[in-house]
Image 1 (cartoon, protein in one colour):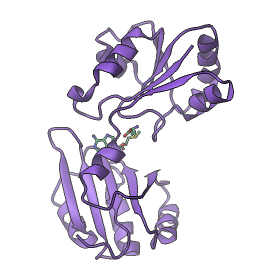
Image 2 (cartoon, rainbow, N blue to C red):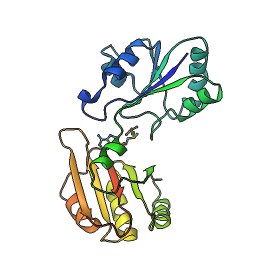
Image 3 (cartoon, rainbow, N blue to C red):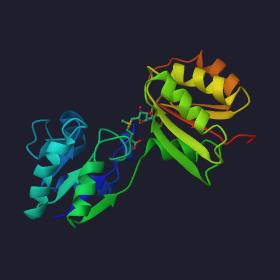
Image 4 (cartoon, rainbow, N blue to C red):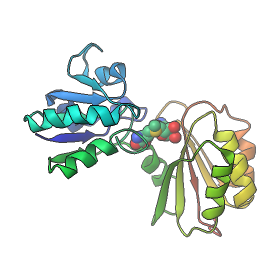
Length: 226
Ligand code: SAM
């Protein structure tokens, strides 16, 4: 019947909304990335039969199965490991297929790392580009930075702990030492850290903190000052 796209916590389990919990519990099937993580949110064992795996590599194939369930009158809930499904996470193809077939889609909004970081960065929020993860190839990253060097709005990126160092070095090279940047680490978790300031200074500070965990990086428009 309806596909519910449900946001889940990005670190602090207290951010699971009552409506998200209720929707997951009431669904005939919960489409997730990792059974253990979603079972924990449901308060059920990971063998819970309603949990159906959907990842980037099988999304296309599983979408057909989920569409059949929806057409047969079942309610399906889509969650990711953390945050909002479809935002640098699986789900886009499934939602698109539902829209194409006229099946109802409802959102249960909640945590999203990009919005959480941007909202308290102190960098301009009136307009922004969400760039997600840049390609891993250095040349592609450099191309992107060059293309958007004079972009008039704030740019929000996701980055893994393995590549944050390279990302910042390349950003420094292309955007220059004066560009204002925010690095948000481990949002809503015990070791939440925000580094905000000129790129050169933030790169220096980064060298003093552990490059472990999850990162959102936000680049202010050229000539923005704090
Ligand atoms: N769909 C998720 C959302 O709505 O935020 C994003 C999923 S994406 C696979 C994971 C990336 O999101 C991480 O590599 C990191 O860049 C960012 N992220 C997720 N949780 C985070 C957190 N607690 N603190 C900082 N960044 C986080």
